[in-house]
Image (cartoon, rainbow, N blue to C red; front, side):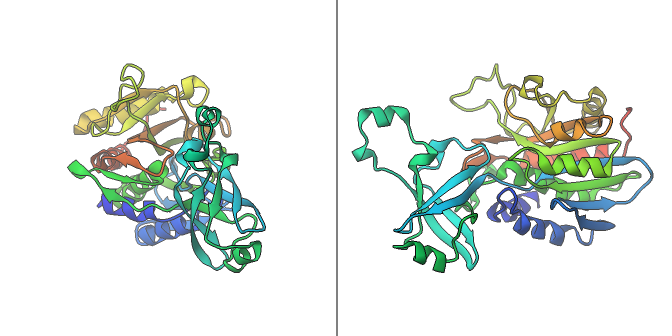
Length: 345
């Protein structure tokens, strides 16, 4: 089931540039379902189901936002940089795991207690530079003995938890949800075309893996599977974000107000028509927020017709993201059915 696969992927750890543990899961899940699987020089994992000369690329980024050690003081407190788009107050007083030379090391993100903040500090809010990681040691040497050094990656210490109505909460649903959708699609699809399932690296820090892999594959068209935020909870207006969790995956028409992807109309129609024919629920998005691997892909070579298929996910870029696995199941069904037909490019 896609929900169990998501749990496994979300509970794994894979900071941008350190996606190996996630890739290991992907390899295990796909080894009996694809014709070949290989890693390119940047670290993208490319799984191929061979067919005719028409090449379709489906990309899902494997990396999650996290931290990296930049310095360790005399008392063993660790300063860090963020990798990916964090909202700093989200980090305050979270548990983390540092992936050191000797294995995982638990720690906490500490900062000045609110009791000791003056009024001006409270107004300004928490900044990354105000925070540090406490792993329990008392010296720089102690941190080194624990296997922590400059450049050690860190991720949030969270496990997937069940909510009511079958919904799930956990870290890195952005984009382990898209990874799970792509894995299940490759396991199930029977297509006359050659399908490249690309599990990309370093999306959260510049769409890097999508760019290099699209250049080398040179597909005829592409879909990125990712997540996007819905407008169905307090603090956001549905007139601005008229998509909801539990009502199916989301086909992107435009994201980032056009600064990112302006999707291929033929690719959008391909997915819409498939959804209508097979009675699969879908939603459409014209977004003003972030972007996805499809932005990098569609600008490669002479231009690659592309769109994004997203899972509505609340509270993205936090350790407590929330989604409905039914949307993921619908996304898998949509891709499996669409890949039986050729887009009218």
